[in-house]
Image 1: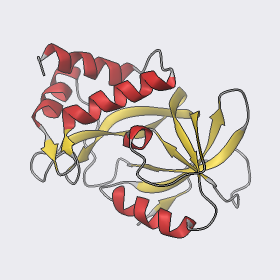
Image 2: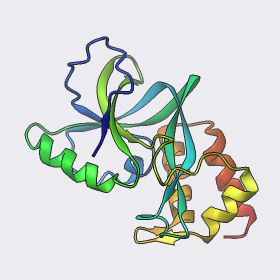
Image 3: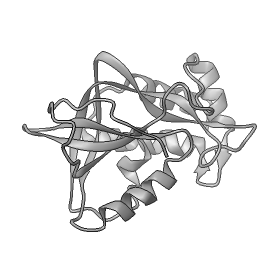
Image 4: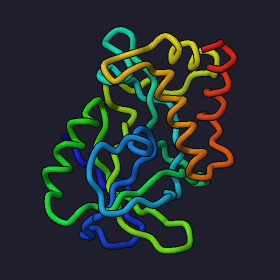
Length: 190
């Protein structure tokens, strides 16, 4: 597992991250115990369906599309931050490293909480140089690929719909690519 320190806005690269930031399936299905969960944002990152999934929402030769974070100085990405339960940190990170193994790297960044405050958090993002990275696609191509894909964790359509619903529960009024993709899939009469 490769680890990348993408950004640490606190200025202290030695800060231990006691939070996990979820911006995809970790929002609605964390799958681990946590002490607290709060809506949070990261600045300078945009959520995009640019990562191929051959281990969860697709298979080799027919990858699904899942989200990653793409650097964008003007963007803000809403997600959910989970404060780690004291003790067991390393075993939890090992579990999440396995879950996010399909091209993702563990990255430290800073999350900002609604109502104020910030914290160092860990997340997993898929850099453009990984073997499963698909990059951008126009909406019709993206929707067609998602519509056709399924893997061990379920259909790719389910992933998109669950993410859109979870973002709305967090209070997202707009998430450009996610909500456009959701609408396109509904237009395909899923």
